Amino acid sequence: DFVMTQSPDSLAVSLGERATINCKSSQSVFWSSNNKNYLAWYQQKPGQPPKLLISWASTRESGVPDRFSGSGSGTDFTLTITSLQAEDVAVYYCQRYYNFPPLTFGGGTKVEIK
Amino acid sequence: QVQLVQSGGGVVQPGGSLRLSCAASGFTFSNYGMHWVRQAPGKGLEWVAVISYDGSNTYYADSVKGRFTISRDNSKSTLYLQMNSLRDDDTAVYYCAKGGPMTVMYHFDYWGQGTLVTVSS
Image (cartoon, rainbow over all chains, first blue to last red):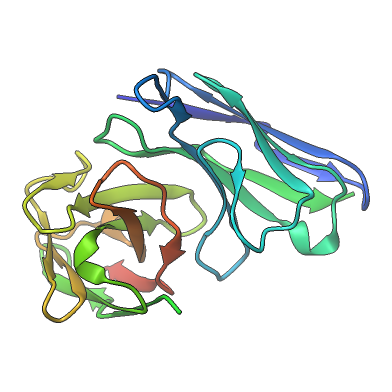
């Protein structure tokens, strides 16, 4: 099966500082036919469904603040929040959607304010 | 605007059955793959099943294969999850999610509000 490993499990960042979350796939999610990485990032706040932030590894969804950015290719990816705001406190998940089943989520990273 | 409104769920005994529904609006339902995802209390997200836009293809997580059935009624813009032989470890919030146009290899851009399924005697 495909495994998505997120790190760290949790992190505490001061307001206005940078938060970096890593996601590693056990197999590449890059499809050379269309030059796309099949990797998404979601944000989930308590009591709410997940919200799509980033698709295709680096495409920010409409309405998502530009302090959120995604990068990486193949098997290694990063979600960066450049200037953490109080409303960014949440759990963040990466997801691979290439060559499944099964479709796989990372274990999640909890972001808190220091 | 896109809306996914879930119904069903509740408390069921081990070995019992339950059917979840997800009514879609705001997009051409028959053009999109649809998924079910679950989240056990305090745990992460687990993909459960997907159905292609026309219902011709379905795929399941190993943990539910043979017990759960995903289906859709495009005339009613509604997605279903029939859950049989329920076990304690099926206890979770279940979400429906909208996938991609004419493909199952796509991210989830909209999610339902979630519905709690509790398996307990």
